[in-house]
Structure formats: structure tokens, C-alpha cells
Amino acid sequence: MAPNTKWLPLFATNFLGVFNNNFFKTLIILLGIKWFSANESSLITSLASGLYVVSYIFFSPYAGKLAKTKHKKKIIVVSRMIEFSLFVIGSFGFYIQNIYVVMTCIFLLGLISTLFSPAKYGLIRDIGGNEGISFGTGTLEMLTFFGALLGPLLAAIISDHYNFFLMAGIFIIVSLSSWFSISRLKVVESEPMKECNDTVNPIKFFIESFKFAGKIKGLNLIVAGLASFWMIASFIQLTILEHCPKVLKMTNTEMGYVLTASAVGIGLGSYLAGIISKGKIELGLTPIGGIGMTITMLLLFILQPTGIIFTGLILLTAMFCGIFMVPLSASIQSSVEGRKQGDMIAYSNFVIFLLIFISAAVFGIISEAFGSNTIFILLVIIVSVMTTIMLFKVPNMNQRFKNLIGMK
Image 1 (spheres, helix red, strand yellow):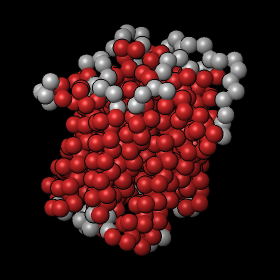
Image 2 (cartoon, helix red, strand yellow; image 1 turned 30 degrees about the horizontal axis):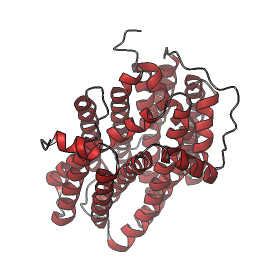
Image 3 (spheres, rainbow, N blue to C red; image 1 turned 45 degrees about the horizontal axis):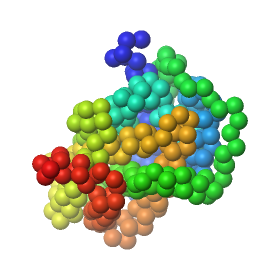
């Protein structure tokens, strides 16, 4: 496979899988509200989002162990086969309009995603070597967000023009395409460990991983910074799903345009971060992303804009999100080598999805009590505090930031 195309199977299976899962989850939210009532929108939104990520909290240690003891490609291939059956069952759940069936499926889809996540990221070094980490991470994250936001876009459009057979056909075709893509991957992996006595107890795993990461200066803060980014991204998506129809009185299709803007923004920011890094890990980009997010979300809270201005500010916020995130993700992957890398990715996933799970619960409480616009000022506080701490505590970040803005 030519160098320019060797990444395609991994990138394609990742995009298609993320797209399908988020398409499914958003349809649960939008159609589930129609099955019940608009008064239950916050509950259904929080429940669907929480069920999808809860597995990352409890099963990330086992996922890290899998990435060390099994061939990573095989893990993804098997997971895609299982996902196909879940989408068939989920389609039946939509057909009979049973919230319990579709909620069970979104939980199981989250579980499968948990189990192959360390394998997915672990393949980046196997495919591109150390010099390919920034490119591979930037592109993988860009496609992840395109999938995570284009899936809801299509779900929003379909929910306004519901057609069961079109919806089920998308689930099944995309799922099969994702399996086919990863089956085409040609990669030489490091040999799996024959035995691994690592704990799968999530609390014990967290403590051991925290201690191990503590031996690498600044790594725990980088993990916390990456987790805060994902929490922010989760808050923004949930806010769009709630704020656009309730406050801005948009149709689901119009809301889809806002989701598209956020997808473009995340993709653009991730791509720019990968290009600016020039094959290196450029931690100086993270404070730039943090400052940009702080400004745009403060404007969203103060101005309470509508229409094009609201969409434009969401796009800019998402772009700065991508710039903030890519160096942190690449830094985690480069912090350790070999099969131990799976542990660090699983540890990162554990913290990330713990915060995403918390964000789903907090969103429901704050949105009901104070309105969805209040979420923006909460995010301003989170971003500004996290960016400031990392700027002065993560090695080289302060100096790299000064170099990028011309303060050498």
C-alpha cells in the first residue's frame, strides 16, 4: 500500500464508526422526545449521552489490557462485526418505537467503542512510526469530530422527514463499510504480550495509572487537559441539541446546520494543528486554543446571538477546540512506547469519559434550573482555569506558546 494511502483503512473505519454511533444516539434523542414529550427532552438527552459513555469509566482498564495482549487490528475487526448485529437490533427498536431497546443498544455500542479505543490509537505508531504521530492523531481526531457531528446532522434532517427504511439502511451500510475498511488495513504490529497481570478494577487501575503517569512530568495535567476538552465538546453538543430548538426556535434541520458548522470548525482546527506542528508535538498551540475558546464562549453568553452570528461563533469555538486538543492527544501517545501505550490511552479514556459522563448529568441539572445559555459561562470558567494551570505547569508549554506568538 502506498505511503499516502496506508492510513486510509484506519481513518475510514474510525470515521464511519463514529458517524454511525452518533447518528444512532442523536436519533434516540430526537425521536425519543417525539415518543414521549418535549418536557422530557433534557432527561432523554442526558440519559442517551450518559449510557453511551458510561462503559469508558468501568471498562477502559480491560480495553487497555486487550490492546496489550491481542493484535490491535483483530480487536477492531471483531468489534465491527458485533456492532453490525447491534445496529440490526437497534433498527428493530426504532421500528417498534421502544425506548428500552434503543437505549440498551446505545449502551452496548458504547461498550464496544470502549474496548477497541486503545487499539485504534495504538495503531497510529504502528502505521506511521514516531514521525507519524502528529499527522495520524490530528487526522484521526479531525475525522472523529466530523463523524461525531455529521452523524447528528443527518439524524436531525431525518427526524424532520422520518423514513424508517432509509434510517435502517444507513445503519447497516455504514456498519458493513466500516468493517470492510479495517479488514483492508496492512500493518506490522509489535507482538502482543503473552501474559498480562494488569488489574481491570477501574479504581485500582486509575490509581496505578495516575502514579505511573506521575513519573513523567506534566503527563497527568495533559490527560486532565485532554479530558476537559472532551467534556467541553460534550457540553457544546448537548447545548446545541437543547438550545437551538427550545431557545432559538430552530427546526431539527436548521439545528443540523449549526452542528455542521461545529463539525467544520473542529475539523479545521484539528487539521491546522497537525499542519502547524510539522511532524512535531507543538504544545504551544494548546494555550492559543484555550484563549480562543474563552473569548468565543464569553461572547456567546453575553451577546446571546441568534442565526448566523450564533452559528459563526460556534464554528470559531469548535475550531479553537481542535487547536487546543491535538497537541495534548499526540503528547499522550508519544509519552510511552510499546504495549504500555495502551494503558496510557485507556487511562486517558477513563478520565475523559468520566468527565463526559459528569457533563451529561450536570447539563441536565443546569439546563433545567438556569437555561441552556448558562452552560457557556460554565465552560468559560473551565477552559480558562485549565489553560492557565497547564500553561505554567506542563513542561515547555509556556515557552512554546511564547515562541508561537513571537515572544521569544
